[in-house]
Length: 128
Image (cartoon, rainbow, N blue to C red; front, top):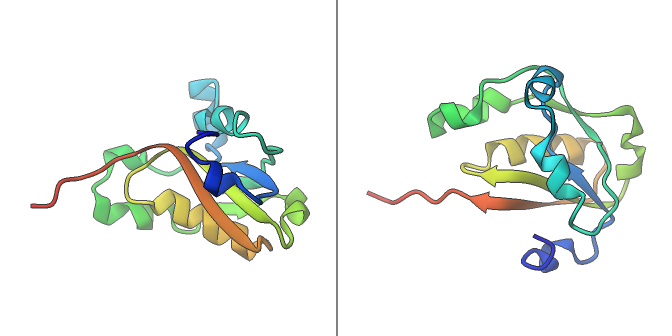
């Protein structure tokens, strides 16, 4: 991710992983986005928190994903580190971009100047 995402990482100040809901974190035992963020070469700031448990995006049709995560994220109290910064939002997979969009909106509302996204994988769907 560090090599392939070099253009996204260039000039950025911090990496922010997409958070899991605390109950899902306990079930899984780790946050895959946080693990990935540790390897991109930027300071990792857990600037976001998940306000409510949402259905797994993987289990939802594309049309329902944006609604599922709408207003599900907020900036944590240490969000002051975001002010005026270029932030790289890190997640494992992007399918429709709904989670990234919801998180980016929260980061921008929290004072980030620019939000870029870096994911380990992107799901491509075939056009019919």
